[in-house]
Amino acid sequence: MSDWESVIGLEVHIQLATRSKIFSGASTEFGAEPNNQACLIDVALPGVLPVCNLEAVRMAVKFGIAIGAGINRKSIFERKNYFYPDLPKGYQISQYQIPIVVGGTLDTVVDGSVHTVGITRAHLEEDAGKSLHDEFPGATGIDLNRAGTPLLEIVSDPDIRSAQQAADYMRRLHRLVTYLGICDGNMQEGSLRCDANVSMRPRGQEELGTRTELKNINSFRFVEKGIITEIDRQIDVLESGGTVIQETRLYDPIRNITRPMRGKEDAQDYRYFPDPDLPPLVLSEEFIDSVRTDFPELPEQRKLRFMTQFNLSEADAAQLTQSRPVADYFESALDHADNPKGVANWINGELSSYLNKEGIDISDSRVDPDALGQIVANVDSGVISGHGGKILLSILWEKPKLSINEIIESENLRQDSDSGTIEALIDEVFAAEPEQVQRLKDGNQKLIGFFVGQVMKKSRGKADPKLVSDIIRKRIRS
Ligand code: ADP
Ligand code: MG
Image 1 (cartoon, rainbow, N blue to C red):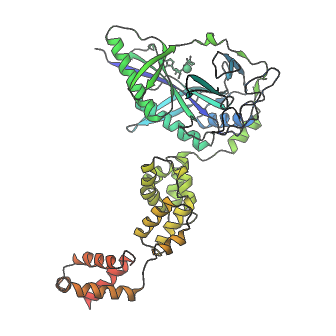
Image 2: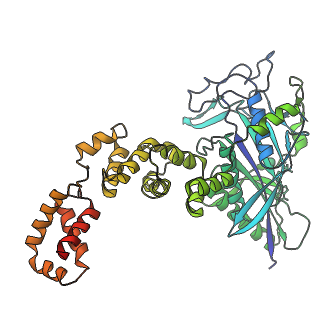
Image 3: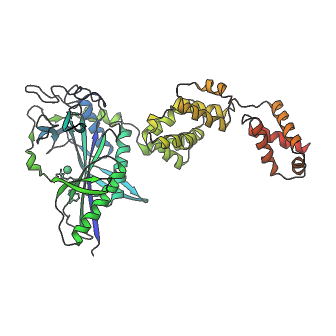
């Protein structure tokens, strides 16, 4: 039994967040009726001419700068020829010999150790349409809305050494492109998908083994599980004296196996050639500089700013900047509550548990940052108790249209800080428990908690517990 080393290279496709397609003016919006967003250019009717979307180019350059890559001042669009029903043109416009972005790196961190992954290249291309196999019994439908959607394909060097590193790489790439604002990061809608190339070699061997490619993985969890499964399969093949065949495979997460999909094409099968309809993509220094100067804040910078500007711990700042939507939500909530630590706690605690329960992202939260900020502000100013804040959040979660003040009034959450009322409640409680009162007066401090609890109960949670305990302490001293 040898000691095997796994070698992994990822090809990640991100959908660029442009409003229109890469070579036409058709909308890229998700969810339209099938075939309502594919124009004549997207299906390449004879005589139409593609025109490159400058916004997509800007986004590719932004990515290149962020990973420290080189930007080719001149890159070429080529036709990648193949037949498939969802590809009416018979070719996909992509970049092959000269891509827009070359080189650069992305660091992964697994169990505290940093591993730098080289990026081979990133190139612009168009997406194909979609075959719908399940919607029409006995037939396959074709939806061309996605045809011509701009993609950036990011190809890593075969530098990744474990499934965990591969998943971390994908997470960090996801975080980077959403921070850059070049991809909405919506994995359910296919905005970020990955092909994983996997091979094995005896540890210490320089030469790479034969790889297989797992196609179209659209979750971080499946990239990890799929690669683990494929590594196990290849080791089994090799240790039983067989050889790994270069092929494209699919990961089946239900049965947790990978199975062959098709033999692997070689580049020559695609008959790449420069697209005669598109001139070389030439970038001026001014254009690249304009991208450089208008650069968004990246995760690490934002984390450090949160620590200095808001005086947050590194752990809090790291959690809040984990994803851009969370960081944005936090900063919007702060417009309403001058309490960074408090807002951080509410987001990482109470709000997260609602989001997790329903499995939704913060960008789909039913309670928006303005409302959360107002809840925190009401608790901080003593209008409602912390407990009241939780009730408020739970009601707002169900009925997001209600106003905060309405709920405070209708649910009677306004905190009673009127000491007269509290004194009266304490009188009642003391009268009911004369023996305990005596023990408290004799110095059994533990009973303070008991009496505060009793008073809170009588006030139905509306009394300010701090005020109750202050008054009780004063009473027993007198
Ligand atoms: P293709 O475009 O035909 O899939 P490439 O040579 O461009 O092939 O490589 C695609 C991906 O496969 C890259 O991420 C690369 O790092 C990775 N890769 C290439 N050879 C191997 C190998 N032997 N083992 C693992 N990954 C590999
Ligand atoms: Mg490939």
